[in-house]
Image (cartoon, rainbow, N blue to C red; front, side, top):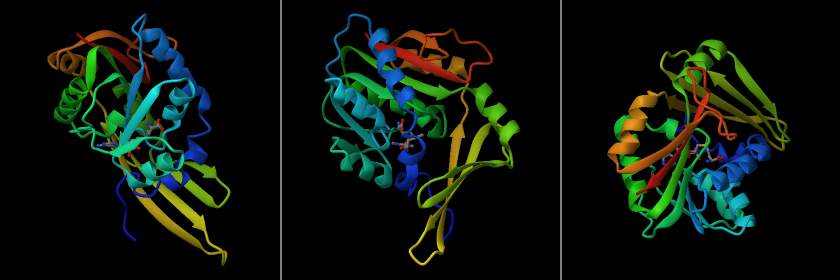
Length: 246
Ligand SMILES: C[S@@+](CC[C@H](N)C(=O)[O-])C[C@H]1O[C@@H](n2cnc3c(N)ncnc32)[C@H](O)[C@@H]1O
């Protein structure tokens, strides 16, 4: 089997690795509730929702939540949790309804190839937002991607799961983060089946992303370097954007 597209099969093990990061997902709910001030959010759309970990938290807290993703394997897990999800592409999604909040987290936008694709995503977002609604998203910063590539090139993170061994290996690259995920699944006969996916996270200039937000007619309310609303500086690892439809 050759190298697969990102998330072609990773959904099979995703929650055993990332589903443990409940503090991160719960922190997002708190961040959102503070960021929107007194705007009353009822309906939420999670863009690139993956297996729906954040959706579950919003749902438990009384929000009307839907989500979409492009990966069948991730969507399959979200559906098994009885979440309302669609198969759509960030670059050009059409759900046919509007929401008070659109949210896109955990590097998902870094998967888009260039600023043109980010722009198309913002344009679709505006079409799905109610008046005064919010678009909240994060991006791994350019600084983080360059540092990660230098620091981890050739090395791998290893996760030992119940029936799987998983490696996330950083490959050589300059301005993007190229990761190969290798999953070894133990079969009943003791042999392992292996599948490999290639993930590419692009790095973007902060100023250019800001410009795009404004060009799409959104108001930029703030950019932070953490879910505690810390200021952005040149060594921020992640940027958290809070934007509002005028
Ligand atoms: C790092 S995962 C994050 C998933 C989820 N937001 C979470 O917090 O667990 C990135 C997600 O982006 C999705 N994705 C990547 N490119 C996409 C695209 N063009 N359209 C929709 N989803 C996309 C992947 O399928 C994957 O589920």
